[in-house]
Length: 183
Length: 183
DNA sequence: TCGCTCATGTAATGGGTTACATGATTCA
DNA sequence: TGAATCATGTAACCCATTACATGAGCGA
Image (cartoon, rainbow over all chains, first blue to last red; front, side):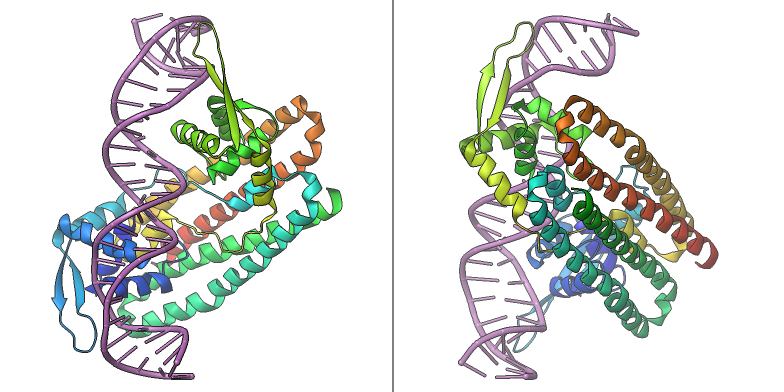
C-alpha cells in the first residue's frame, strides 16, 4: 500500500525518498505513515516494476540525490487503484481495548491510570488535527493555489481524524466514569 | 500482540488452537483478529517460552486435540502487560482516506461510489455491534455468571466500536454531501 | 454427493520495524 | 561541542497472510 502513497505524491512532481518521507510526515501520517528505510526499499521495487524511474542529481558538500519520477505505467497503476472501491471492512487493532477486555476487575486502579494516559494522548492528537494540519493545508495551498479543489478532499480526510479523536475522548470519559462508579 | 490475546483467553481455562480461534472470532475480532495458522504458530512459540504447556487429548473418529494451559510464568507475563500503560498513539492505516487524499477532483463520480460502498459496509458493522455482540456477551454470561463485572468491560470495548461506526457513518454522509455540492 | 465442522500443522511470501553504517553542513 | 538536517542505503528480524496438505464425521 505504501506503493500508492509514493505514487500519489509523485503524480504532482518528481521527488527523492527523503523528500517523500517529509511529505508523508506532514500530510498523510495520520492515516498512513512509513519510515525512511521502507520508503527506499519500496521505491527500489517500484523502479524494478517500471512504475517510476530515477536519476542521480550530483550535489556538492552533501550527498547526491536520487530523484524519482512517475512513468506512464505508474500513473495508470495509480488511477486504477484510485477508482477501485474497497469492499472489505477495515481491520482494526487496538491494544487498549484488548487490555480492557482481558483486565480483571481487581485491577481497577491500573485500568483507570491506563485510560487517563490515553485521554491525554488523544487530547494531543485532537489538537494536532485542529491546529497543525489546517496550517499545513494552508501552506500547501499558498505554494500551489491550483490545488484548491484537492484541498477540499484533504480537509475531509483531516475531519475524519478530528472526529475520530473527539469520539474516542468522549468514549474514554464515559468509560472512566462507568468504571469509577460501577466496577 | 496476539500472544496476549491467547494468554488472555487461557487465563480462564485450557483451550485448543481451534477453540481459541472461535473465541477470537466471536469476541475480540473487532479489535484484534487472527487466522488459525498464526494462532498455531504463536502457541508453539509461547510453549517454547514456557508461558503455556500443552498435552494431547486423544479422540476417536476425529483428530486428536492439543490442549494448551497457561503456566505461572504465563500468568505473570499477562498481568505485567495488562498493568503497563500504552504511551504511544495508536498507528492508524485507512486506505479510504488515502484514496480521498490522492483523488483528483475529476474522478468525482468514482469517489462518490467509493464512499457509498463504505457507507453500506459501516452500516453493517454498526448493526453487528448493536445486535450480535450484546447477544454474545449475554450468552457468555449465561454460561459463566460470575463474570458479570468483566462483562462491564467487554461492553465498554463494544461501545467503542459502536461509537466508532456511528462517527464514521456521520463523517461519510457529511463528506458525500460536501463532494456532491462543492467539488 | 457436496459442503461444513472439527482438528492440526508447514512453507512461502509480504509488509513493516529496528539496527547498522556513513558523512558533510548548519545552527544553537 | 553537540544536535539537527540533509541524504542514502543494507541486513536481520518480526508479525501476519496465503497457500498447501490431510482427513474423518455429519447433515442437507
